[in-house]
Image (cartoon, rainbow, N blue to C red; front, side, top):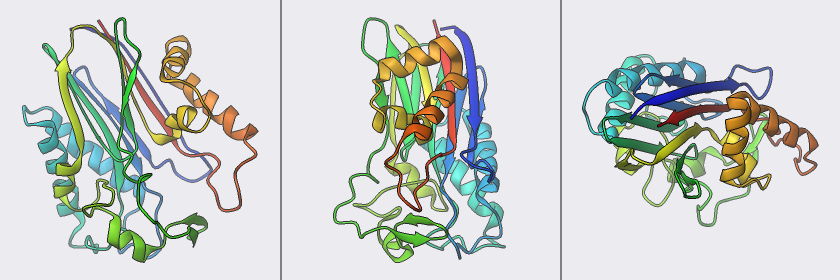
Length: 260
């Protein structure tokens, strides 16, 4: 396998700090999407601190031969240990992130997703497929969203019952056992032409604006990761469906891998 190219870009959705994070090397890549902070989360650190520290911890683990779920488990544990003395890491809305990770080398390509970031894979002669985690979207009987910290979202008492709980949804936060709930896979790298790791600020091109994954990868091939961000921003500006308290522009991040 040869990594023929890698392009990456990230952009904040507003004047606030970007809560996405990306890292890549010649044998692995990752994107993290920090969960917008809730008030009274029990932490002295902000979300950019959390994703930067989680990214660094994951990078160290990806250099090992550990199972990719163990990579995530160890990364979460390392960050939790780093701030458990100063913060209430048991708070139900302690800083958190979704994650998409890829590791490649030899004859195998490994991927992992936790939360609604995605890994998009394109094999020669086949339609692209996206691997993600839609458990947040599949919650049964969720309550109405309400204003919390300037945005309309689920109340904290509901999140305490469903975030990182069986039957709910899972993110990287303070509990390393969340790694056991990640979706993951390992497959031959032969025939894999490209892969993309994207946060949900990019996947909304498909999920909200009707592109196919083939079209998304076509935009990426012609204009790189920056083209994807430009396309989603144009679609968001033209969208008349956003109501008060909705997040029109989300942080958006993409890492594109050319494989041959």
